[in-house]
Image 1 (cartoon, rainbow over the protein chains, first blue to last red):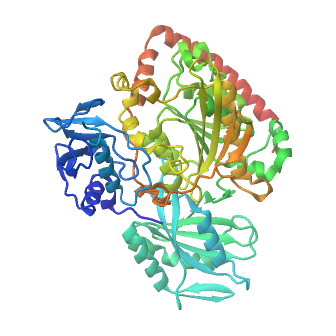
Image 2: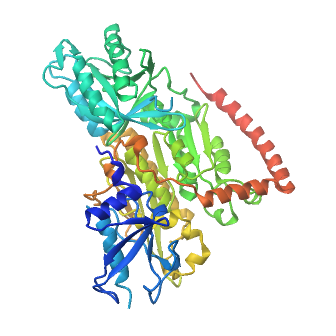
Image 3: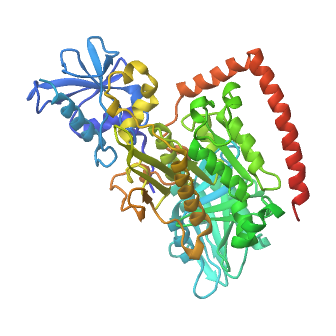
Amino acid sequence: MSMAAPAETGVEGFIAGLQRCGTKAVLDNGVVRFTVTAVMGAYAGEEIETGVGSDELGGWPAVPPHWVHLPAHVAFSKTNSQPSPIPGWTKHSRDIKGWGNAKEPAQAWIGHVRAVLAETQ
Amino acid sequence: MRSTPTSVAMTGSMARDLEAHLLRSDGQEDLCLATYRPSAGTRRTSALLREFLPPEKGEREVHGNASFKGQYVVRASQIAAPSREGVVLLHSHPGGHGWQGMSSCDEDAERSYAYLAHEMTGLPLVGMTLAGGDKTWSARVWEPYGTPRSCESVRVVGDQLRISWNGDLRPRPLLGRHQLRTRSAWGEVIQADIARVRALVVGLGSVGLEVALRLAATGIVNIGIMDFDTIEEVNLDRLVGATSLDACLHRAKTDVAHRLLLEAATARDPRIDVFETSICEPQGLARALNYDVVFSCVDRPWPRAVLNMLAYSDLIPVIDGGIHIDPFVDGGIRNATWRSHVVRPGRPCLACNKQLDLGAVSADREGLWDDPSYIAGFPSSDLPARENVAALSVGVVSSLLTQFVSFVVAPGGRGDPGPLQYVLSTHTLGHRPDRTMENCYFEKSVADGDLRLDLTDQHAAAEEQRALRRSASSRFPVRLGRMADKGLGALRNALLSHLHRRSSTA
């Protein structure tokens, strides 16, 4: 039997998970902001700021978010996007596939963001 | 009062552990303690057993009867309280059969610890008895100052859904002539048990409506039907019994289903509860918690995720299924497959058996699949499939209902068969090899009850549909049409009800 400790779920759980992965995150304008290092694509090797809307984290970690928030300069040849609450940022529609079996869900999300960044050219 | 349990539920593995401890080979009574977490619906609160706490050395003595030390209750309360759990005191009546009353000794023992357990945990003490003769469980809840209140049922969710009924609070329904053939198939005892199961059908499309009708015809007394949608002309090729008049009068799917279920019902006093809501809304989930079993007849990821959680966190098994039709682009059909499965502790969840894409839930929750500007950004091949054929969807209906019968009746002593798949092109029915994923969050949420991860929220599409129906009902032609239709329907229902009562036997 389990009891989900408060820090394992929701916004707090997401931030705590990122911290376990060595990534510091802050809540800004309703978006949890953090940095990932791109491994492929136009920004390979660079640290890129990214974020997740806190309104999408109510079901974390059972249900992952949908939108990947990125600064507007991170552009894609093809994307379905909307404005982010953070000025100068855009959120991109990207479902994560195969969710549900990561030992550390935050690490799986970081991997997802890296895969999205790999699309940049 | 919401957290005062009126029912108890446990997993099959918990029941096995408790039975192994309480039913001794030397035939003496025994006792033990466990913890529980409440799961509060709008009408029923269930105590969900979470942790079995066997007695440690010196905490209990067996001497024909069994007695225990107060320290045992203190230890259990200390374990329960930090997890917001209550305490359950269980004992056995080795030769007993059926729902058990309490001897004065039993009553004194439970009463004397009711206050202590409540003080230490904030939740009432639950007392349970296991009848060794037929493994019937009985349960009651103790107010802090020592008044016991009998529970209505105890549910064991294992390979079979085994429900012990308190006959005083939920007596066997009277059987009628209508049910003669059903009774002759499995006898009056099984008919009485299956008729008392509270079943909720979520989603009243081609599959859900037909499932609900068959449950009503089988004699199930309490059926809930949940859907927020409105009948439209495009539904009529699949919703058998819905008419153009229903579409014209902007009828809710639940209203049409209610009408059809009352006509199909063979129970003497059927109770059909109508919920014009989504299971994704908090009030939808709260109502679902009143039921013993839920049929999932929805195809969107969000409601399926909510039901997937419910099956584990609240020990309410979900019988789910669906159809996938694979058409050729230029006409014709390559294949169709339909699946069915009981989702419950001990079986893979919907995500583990690949029937729920968790990555698609947030987009559905946000209403993106109902947003034309969002959908315009995708090629049509990436959009959700909508193909359906009434002649094939009945295959899913059949599959769901056979899962239900296997699960509740257990023909030949075997319960639910696990995930099944029928392949139309090869005409083969087979078991699916799906297994639980190691880190599945849903399957680790067993008996979380009211501390479950809440996946519900406001549901814009449901609110919009209800508002549109309210608006339509204010138009004079719709009002007049509904009034005339309602009058005719009421007359017909009164005649049917009269006939049912006449045909019923005591």
